[in-house]
Image (cartoon, rainbow, N blue to C red; front, top):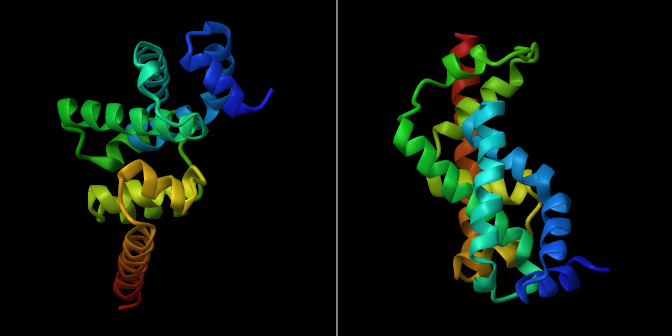
Amino acid sequence: MSEKQLAKKAIKGDADAFLELMHTYQEALYRTAFSYLKNEVDALEAVQEVTYRAYRSIKKVKEPAYFKTWLIRIMMNYCQDVIQKSKREVLEERILSMQGVCEDFTFLEVEEALLSLSDYDRELLHLKYFEDVKIKDIARLWDTPEGTIKTRLHKALRALRAGFEEKGEMKRV
C-alpha cells in the first residue's frame, strides 16, 4: 500500500495505518530531532512526543501526500520549543559531551556555520538538504510561492558559503 493511501486511512482513524507511517518516518524524525537537539536521549523523547502530537491532531492533515512534511514540521516546531525553554546556546559543549566524539571536525564546522544563519534559513536548508523535501512541498508547507522559496534558498546557501570563505580567510592569515 502506498504512503498516500496509508495517510488517507490514518486520517480516517486507522491506528494501524498511522503506526505503519510512523515506523516509515521514524528515522527521518529522529535525524531531524538530533540535528536540532544534539542529544540522543532528547531526540528519542522528541520522536515520542511528536508521535503523540501527530496522533492527537491527525485529522488536521489536509493533504495526505504531504504527511511526511507535516510530521517533520511538527518535529521542527517541537525542537524549537525545547531549545527555547532550555536556552541551549553553547554548541561546542553539547557536541563534545556526546558519546563518540566525531573525529572529522567538518561536522562541527557545518553545524557552526548553520548556527550563524537565521532560524528561517536554517530550517529551509534542513528541509531541502537534510530531509530531501522538494521545493514545491516546502512552498506549500509554508504557504509561500515556489519562486520565493528558491530565492531564499539561494540566499541562504550564499550566506553559508560566505561564512565558510570568511573562516577560511581567517585560518590562512
